[in-house]
Image (cartoon, rainbow, N blue to C red; front, top):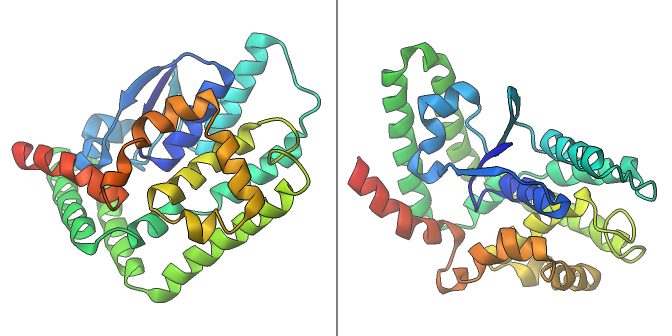
Length: 267
């Protein structure tokens, strides 16, 4: 089994946490979107959306995050023979869909300095145009990515869109807070795949230095956040990459110190 991902990709973190929690071995391939590797024709032919992560098991390729996590869960059950009947899988799925319903893209970009965001955005458009010229048979798919890049910039200039993103996150976390008054984890007393999807969302909030606004103001969520950070899966998947981030102001600035040097060398 192979996973194409990046350590700071939110959906990649969700899948990697699931893999760690289930103890499933896989081959890891880093695909850095800030250097345009997800736009390389080989990867693009496998996944025209160019989104991360991508999970592959033989000829079976899965792009959608929830579908990947469900597949991981089935593999774990088949390997161990332990189908945990105490877990309400319907409730787990409902939480997974709620969490996946909030997109971190606009929220994250809105909380990064404009100069870094625009630098990367311009570079990515150049990459797409270059790849389009190299692989004309994929031109229509690359053109869709180019349109998407312009739409994202338009959304980031729209205060209504930005407010909706923040309000949607608030509503999600309010539901989480209510649930954690009833149970230790999202779907009961055990850590489930729903928690594997929520923890990276909290990590993204912390990475953007917004814990007070979204986590600490919710006592049960703050307590939950402290507990899950002690799990071996968190330490392996998130803690090892995020431990030194606070010396930089933002997620994108952390990436840019590394990626800008790579970009200037290669292009």
